[in-house]
Length: 192
Ligand code: ADP
Image (cartoon, rainbow, N blue to C red; front, top):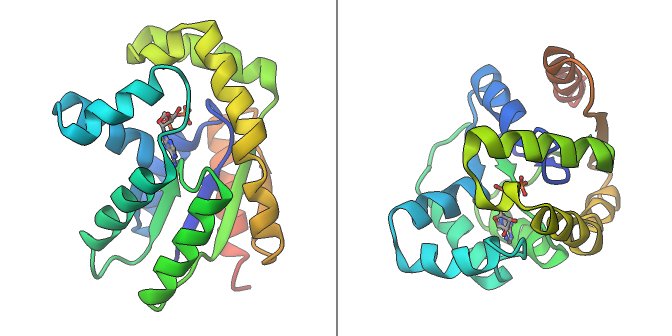
């Protein structure tokens, strides 16, 4: 199996690039943000809970997120691999993912981290708000909170994968196709 963590701050382009990667490598895309939003749309209990955190730009509690992620992975038995997009966002999530994948006799192959500077992220999120209608994209205070939470709780997850020699940083600015090409080269280089 090929299991990839696609990492990066809010607005780094994880969703856009995930779509290309799943197509090229035949992987299943699991975006925790998308799954939460689908639950909000469906007015499920999980959605109601998640919404209260997401609207503020806070993280949904680990236990809730981890259990949801495990359920989603279990729905795709026989998958060639997964792209985890927006997960893990804390070291506790990273550890839980490792343990869970080990139970399934597989593991994370690589963390690909899209690197984009903060001013560019804010610009992109405000632009996205106009088309996505996402509440958490339209309020500069919420965007700032998401970036702060990223720096404090999520950025340390890099070190978790660095310690396993699985971390690759990818410049996330410039032409979208060129960024995809950088990701392809990193993935194709894994077994070379
Ligand atoms: P972005 O990466 O643009 O911030 P996402 O769609 O990945 O957007 O996430 C939107 C929100 O969903 C986050 O701000 C957070 O509230 C919640 N969320 C998504 N993934 C996780 C996660 N792994 N752990 C906790 N909360 C999460």
